[in-house]
Amino acid sequence: MSAAALSVTGLRKRFDDTEVVCGVNLEVTPGECFGLLGPNGAGKTTTLNLCLGMTEPDAGAIRLLGEPVPARAREARAAVGVVPQFDNLDPDFSVAENLLVYGRYFGMADRDIAPRIPGLLEFAGLGGRADAKIRALSGGMKRRLTLARALVNDPRLLFMDEPTTGLDPQARHLIWERLRRLAQQGRTLILTTHFMQEAERLCSRVAIMDRGRIIVEGPPRALIASHIEPQVLEVHGPGVEQWMARARALAPRVERAGQTVFCYAQNVEGAIASLADQDELVYLHRPANLEDLFLKLTGRDLRD
Image 1 (cartoon, rainbow, N blue to C red):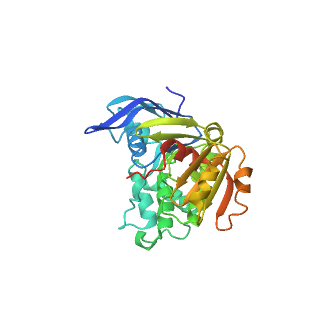
Image 2 (image 1 turned 60 degrees about the vertical axis):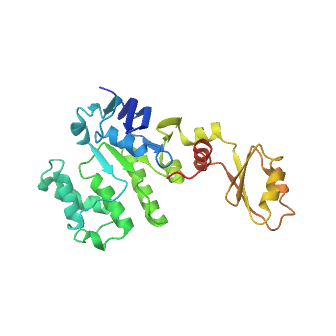
Image 3 (image 1 turned 135 degrees about the horizontal axis):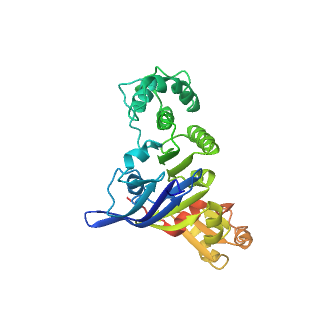
Protein backbone atom coordinates (compact mmCIF):
# COMPACT_ATOMS: atom_id res chain seq x y z
CA MET A 1 0.00 0.00 0.00
CA SER A 2 1.14 3.52 -0.78
CA ALA A 3 2.05 5.74 2.17
CA ALA A 4 0.64 8.74 0.28
CA ALA A 5 -2.89 9.94 0.96
CA LEU A 6 -3.21 10.45 -2.80
CA SER A 7 -0.86 9.21 -5.50
CA VAL A 8 -1.43 10.00 -9.18
CA THR A 9 0.85 8.88 -12.01
CA GLY A 10 0.54 9.62 -15.73
CA LEU A 11 -3.13 10.61 -15.48
CA ARG A 12 -4.85 11.39 -18.77
CA LYS A 13 -8.42 12.24 -19.78
CA ARG A 14 -9.85 13.31 -23.13
CA PHE A 15 -13.28 14.69 -23.96
CA ASP A 16 -14.01 14.51 -27.70
CA ASP A 17 -10.97 16.02 -29.43
CA THR A 18 -9.58 17.81 -26.36
CA GLU A 19 -7.23 16.24 -23.84
CA VAL A 20 -8.08 18.06 -20.60
CA VAL A 21 -5.73 16.13 -18.30
CA CYS A 22 -2.35 15.47 -19.91
CA GLY A 23 -0.06 13.14 -17.98
CA VAL A 24 -0.56 14.57 -14.49
CA ASN A 25 1.63 13.30 -11.62
CA LEU A 26 0.75 14.22 -8.03
CA GLU A 27 1.52 12.93 -4.56
CA VAL A 28 -0.15 14.28 -1.42
CA THR A 29 1.21 13.19 1.94
CA PRO A 30 -1.06 12.44 4.91
CA GLY A 31 -1.85 15.49 7.02
CA GLU A 32 -0.87 18.17 4.50
CA CYS A 33 -3.01 20.89 2.95
CA PHE A 34 -2.40 20.72 -0.80
CA GLY A 35 -3.65 23.30 -3.29
CA LEU A 36 -4.37 22.58 -6.95
CA LEU A 37 -4.46 25.92 -8.73
CA GLY A 38 -5.10 26.97 -12.31
CA PRO A 39 -7.21 29.19 -14.57
CA ASN A 40 -10.69 28.20 -15.72
CA GLY A 41 -10.51 25.16 -17.98
CA ALA A 42 -7.09 24.09 -16.69
CA GLY A 43 -8.38 20.63 -15.78
CA LYS A 44 -8.56 20.96 -11.98
CA THR A 45 -12.13 19.77 -11.43
CA THR A 46 -11.70 16.93 -13.92
CA THR A 47 -8.57 15.84 -12.05
CA LEU A 48 -10.47 15.80 -8.75
CA ASN A 49 -13.31 13.80 -10.32
CA LEU A 50 -10.80 11.30 -11.68
CA CYS A 51 -9.16 10.96 -8.25
CA LEU A 52 -12.55 10.30 -6.66
CA GLY A 53 -13.48 7.68 -9.24
CA MET A 54 -16.35 9.78 -10.57
CA THR A 55 -14.81 9.82 -14.06
CA GLU A 56 -12.97 6.99 -15.82
CA PRO A 57 -9.37 7.90 -16.80
CA ASP A 58 -8.01 7.16 -20.26
CA ALA A 59 -4.59 6.32 -18.80
CA GLY A 60 -2.63 6.52 -15.58
CA ALA A 61 -2.72 5.13 -12.06
CA ILE A 62 -4.51 6.53 -9.00
CA ARG A 63 -4.30 5.39 -5.40
CA LEU A 64 -6.59 7.14 -2.92
CA LEU A 65 -5.93 6.30 0.74
CA GLY A 66 -4.12 3.20 -0.44
CA GLU A 67 -6.98 1.98 -2.66
CA PRO A 68 -6.72 1.74 -6.47
CA VAL A 69 -9.14 4.05 -8.26
CA PRO A 70 -11.49 3.54 -10.01
CA ALA A 71 -11.40 -0.20 -9.18
CA ARG A 72 -11.99 0.38 -5.45
CA ALA A 73 -13.16 3.99 -5.52
CA ARG A 74 -16.24 3.21 -3.45
CA GLU A 75 -14.13 1.77 -0.63
CA ALA A 76 -11.74 4.74 -0.75
CA ARG A 77 -14.57 7.29 -0.71
CA ALA A 78 -15.87 5.83 2.57
CA ALA A 79 -13.05 7.73 4.30
CA VAL A 80 -13.25 10.85 2.12
CA GLY A 81 -15.28 14.06 2.46
CA VAL A 82 -16.15 16.28 -0.51
CA VAL A 83 -17.06 19.97 -0.64
CA PRO A 84 -18.29 20.48 -4.24
CA GLN A 85 -17.84 23.68 -6.22
CA PHE A 86 -21.56 24.43 -6.02
CA ASP A 87 -23.73 23.77 -2.99
CA ASN A 88 -26.11 20.85 -3.55
CA LEU A 89 -27.98 20.85 -0.24
CA ASP A 90 -31.51 19.42 -0.28
CA PRO A 91 -33.95 22.37 0.08
CA ASP A 92 -36.73 20.07 1.30
CA PHE A 93 -34.81 19.11 4.44
CA SER A 94 -33.78 21.11 7.47
CA VAL A 95 -30.15 21.76 8.32
CA ALA A 96 -29.95 18.73 10.64
CA GLU A 97 -31.86 16.51 8.20
CA ASN A 98 -29.33 17.32 5.46
CA LEU A 99 -26.57 15.97 7.70
CA LEU A 100 -28.60 12.94 8.77
CA VAL A 101 -29.53 11.88 5.24
CA TYR A 102 -25.99 12.44 3.95
CA GLY A 103 -24.60 10.20 6.69
CA ARG A 104 -26.89 7.41 5.54
CA TYR A 105 -25.14 7.42 2.16
CA PHE A 106 -22.06 6.10 4.00
CA GLY A 107 -24.08 3.31 5.61
CA MET A 108 -24.12 5.06 8.97
CA ALA A 109 -27.03 4.40 11.34
CA ASP A 110 -29.13 7.33 12.53
CA ARG A 111 -28.12 6.56 16.13
CA ASP A 112 -24.47 7.14 15.12
CA ILE A 113 -25.10 10.26 13.03
CA ALA A 114 -27.40 12.14 15.42
CA PRO A 115 -24.83 12.62 18.24
CA ARG A 116 -22.37 14.11 15.74
CA ILE A 117 -24.76 16.77 14.40
CA PRO A 118 -24.53 19.35 17.27
CA GLY A 119 -20.72 19.32 17.16
CA LEU A 120 -20.66 19.64 13.36
CA LEU A 121 -23.05 22.59 13.47
CA GLU A 122 -20.99 24.32 16.17
CA PHE A 123 -17.87 23.73 14.08
CA ALA A 124 -19.58 25.37 11.11
CA GLY A 125 -20.85 28.33 13.15
CA LEU A 126 -24.44 27.10 12.78
CA GLY A 127 -25.26 26.29 16.38
CA GLY A 128 -28.98 26.78 16.99
CA ARG A 129 -29.81 26.37 13.28
CA ALA A 130 -30.54 22.62 13.30
CA ASP A 131 -34.23 23.08 12.46
CA ALA A 132 -33.77 25.90 9.94
CA LYS A 133 -34.77 25.31 6.33
CA ILE A 134 -32.10 25.62 3.65
CA ARG A 135 -33.97 28.46 1.94
CA ALA A 136 -33.65 30.52 5.14
CA LEU A 137 -29.84 30.34 5.12
CA SER A 138 -27.49 32.93 3.66
CA GLY A 139 -24.93 31.92 1.06
CA GLY A 140 -22.22 31.82 3.71
CA MET A 141 -24.32 29.60 5.97
CA LYS A 142 -24.99 27.18 3.11
CA ARG A 143 -21.29 26.97 2.32
CA ARG A 144 -20.44 26.27 5.96
CA LEU A 145 -23.17 23.63 6.12
CA THR A 146 -21.70 21.97 3.03
CA LEU A 147 -18.36 21.82 4.85
CA ALA A 148 -20.03 20.34 7.95
CA ARG A 149 -21.81 17.79 5.76
CA ALA A 150 -18.49 16.69 4.27
CA LEU A 151 -17.33 15.80 7.80
CA VAL A 152 -20.31 13.60 8.73
CA ASN A 153 -18.37 10.39 8.07
CA ASP A 154 -15.28 11.65 10.00
CA PRO A 155 -13.11 11.52 6.84
CA ARG A 156 -9.35 11.17 6.80
CA LEU A 157 -9.12 13.22 3.58
CA LEU A 158 -11.19 16.20 2.44
CA PHE A 159 -11.54 17.33 -1.20
CA MET A 160 -12.71 20.93 -1.59
CA ASP A 161 -13.48 22.51 -4.97
CA GLU A 162 -13.34 26.32 -4.54
CA PRO A 163 -14.65 26.21 -0.94
CA THR A 164 -15.04 29.98 -0.45
CA THR A 165 -16.28 31.15 -3.86
CA GLY A 166 -18.97 33.81 -3.55
CA LEU A 167 -18.47 34.41 0.18
CA ASP A 168 -18.00 37.76 1.90
CA PRO A 169 -14.72 38.35 3.79
CA GLN A 170 -16.21 37.44 7.18
CA ALA A 171 -17.49 34.06 5.97
CA ARG A 172 -14.26 33.39 4.09
CA HIS A 173 -12.12 34.03 7.17
CA LEU A 174 -14.34 31.78 9.28
CA ILE A 175 -13.94 28.91 6.81
CA TRP A 176 -10.17 29.51 6.70
CA GLU A 177 -10.05 29.20 10.48
CA ARG A 178 -12.07 25.98 10.37
CA LEU A 179 -9.83 24.50 7.67
CA ARG A 180 -6.73 25.32 9.74
CA ARG A 181 -8.36 23.52 12.65
CA LEU A 182 -8.93 20.44 10.50
CA ALA A 183 -5.30 20.50 9.38
CA GLN A 184 -4.17 20.74 13.00
CA GLN A 185 -6.22 17.60 13.68
CA GLY A 186 -4.10 15.77 11.12
CA ARG A 187 -6.62 15.54 8.30
CA THR A 188 -5.42 15.71 4.72
CA LEU A 189 -6.90 18.64 2.76
CA ILE A 190 -6.89 18.97 -1.03
CA LEU A 191 -8.42 22.15 -2.42
CA THR A 192 -8.82 24.06 -5.64
CA THR A 193 -9.26 27.81 -5.43
CA HIS A 194 -9.05 30.97 -7.51
CA PHE A 195 -8.13 32.96 -4.39
CA MET A 196 -4.34 32.98 -4.35
CA GLN A 197 -4.39 34.56 -0.88
CA GLU A 198 -6.38 31.54 0.31
CA ALA A 199 -3.85 29.08 -1.09
CA GLU A 200 -0.93 31.07 0.29
CA ARG A 201 -2.49 31.17 3.77
CA LEU A 202 -3.65 27.55 3.99
CA CYS A 203 -1.51 25.33 1.79
CA SER A 204 1.83 23.82 2.74
CA ARG A 205 2.29 22.93 -0.93
CA VAL A 206 0.61 23.91 -4.20
CA ALA A 207 0.65 22.78 -7.82
CA ILE A 208 -0.24 25.16 -10.64
CA MET A 209 -2.03 23.48 -13.52
CA ASP A 210 -2.56 24.93 -16.98
CA ARG A 211 -3.98 23.33 -20.11
CA GLY A 212 -4.11 19.94 -18.41
CA ARG A 213 -0.51 19.91 -17.18
CA ILE A 214 1.23 20.63 -13.88
CA ILE A 215 3.71 23.43 -14.60
CA VAL A 216 5.17 24.00 -11.10
CA GLU A 217 4.80 22.39 -7.70
CA GLY A 218 6.15 23.21 -4.24
CA PRO A 219 5.68 25.32 -1.08
CA PRO A 220 4.12 28.71 -1.97
CA ARG A 221 6.92 30.90 -0.58
CA ALA A 222 9.62 28.75 -2.20
CA LEU A 223 7.89 28.96 -5.59
CA ILE A 224 7.51 32.74 -5.28
CA ALA A 225 11.19 33.14 -4.35
CA SER A 226 12.38 31.01 -7.28
CA HIS A 227 10.15 32.42 -10.02
CA ILE A 228 9.32 36.04 -9.16
CA GLU A 229 11.29 39.21 -8.40
CA PRO A 230 10.74 39.95 -4.68
CA GLN A 231 9.38 43.52 -4.98
CA VAL A 232 6.33 44.74 -6.88
CA LEU A 233 5.25 48.29 -7.70
CA GLU A 234 1.68 48.83 -8.96
CA VAL A 235 1.04 52.22 -10.60
CA HIS A 236 -2.13 53.66 -12.10
CA GLY A 237 -3.63 57.05 -12.99
CA PRO A 238 -3.57 59.63 -15.81
CA GLY A 239 -0.29 59.49 -17.71
CA VAL A 240 0.66 55.99 -16.60
CA GLU A 241 1.38 54.96 -20.19
CA GLN A 242 4.03 57.67 -20.55
CA TRP A 243 5.54 56.77 -17.16
CA MET A 244 5.63 53.09 -18.20
CA ALA A 245 8.23 53.93 -20.87
CA ARG A 246 10.48 55.39 -18.14
CA ALA A 247 9.84 52.41 -15.86
CA ARG A 248 11.20 49.94 -18.41
CA ALA A 249 14.67 51.36 -17.79
CA LEU A 250 14.27 51.05 -14.00
CA ALA A 251 12.85 47.53 -13.57
CA PRO A 252 13.73 44.26 -15.34
CA ARG A 253 10.09 43.28 -15.87
CA VAL A 254 7.25 45.73 -16.51
CA GLU A 255 3.72 44.64 -17.45
CA ARG A 256 0.46 46.43 -18.03
CA ALA A 257 -2.98 45.06 -17.15
CA GLY A 258 -5.80 47.42 -18.02
CA GLN A 259 -4.90 50.82 -16.58
CA THR A 260 -2.35 49.45 -14.07
CA VAL A 261 1.38 49.03 -14.64
CA PHE A 262 3.24 46.36 -12.65
CA CYS A 263 6.98 46.68 -12.08
CA TYR A 264 8.87 43.63 -10.78
CA ALA A 265 12.42 44.01 -9.45
CA GLN A 266 14.88 43.17 -6.70
CA ASN A 267 14.64 46.81 -5.66
CA VAL A 268 12.00 49.26 -6.88
CA GLU A 269 13.35 52.37 -5.11
CA GLY A 270 14.47 53.86 -8.41
CA ALA A 271 11.02 53.40 -9.91
CA ILE A 272 9.41 54.92 -6.81
CA ALA A 273 11.79 57.91 -7.02
CA SER A 274 10.69 58.46 -10.64
CA LEU A 275 7.15 59.03 -9.36
CA ALA A 276 8.14 62.02 -7.22
CA ASP A 277 7.01 64.52 -9.89
CA GLN A 278 4.01 62.47 -11.00
CA ASP A 279 1.29 63.72 -8.65
CA GLU A 280 -1.48 62.30 -10.80
CA LEU A 281 -0.19 58.74 -10.42
CA VAL A 282 -1.05 56.47 -7.50
CA TYR A 283 1.21 53.60 -6.52
CA LEU A 284 1.37 50.60 -4.21
CA HIS A 285 4.68 49.03 -3.16
CA ARG A 286 4.38 45.44 -1.90
CA PRO A 287 6.22 42.10 -1.75
CA ALA A 288 5.57 39.56 -4.49
CA ASN A 289 2.85 37.01 -3.78
CA LEU A 290 1.36 33.81 -5.18
CA GLU A 291 -0.95 35.73 -7.51
CA ASP A 292 2.08 37.32 -9.20
CA LEU A 293 3.55 33.85 -9.73
CA PHE A 294 0.22 32.53 -11.05
CA LEU A 295 -0.14 35.36 -13.56
CA LYS A 296 3.46 35.07 -14.72
CA LEU A 297 3.10 31.35 -15.43
CA THR A 298 -0.46 31.27 -16.83
CA GLY A 299 -0.72 34.76 -18.37
CA ARG A 300 -3.11 37.66 -17.85
CA ASP A 301 -5.54 36.82 -20.65
CA LEU A 302 -9.11 35.96 -19.63
CA ARG A 303 -10.12 32.28 -19.71
CA ASP A 304 -13.71 31.24 -20.40
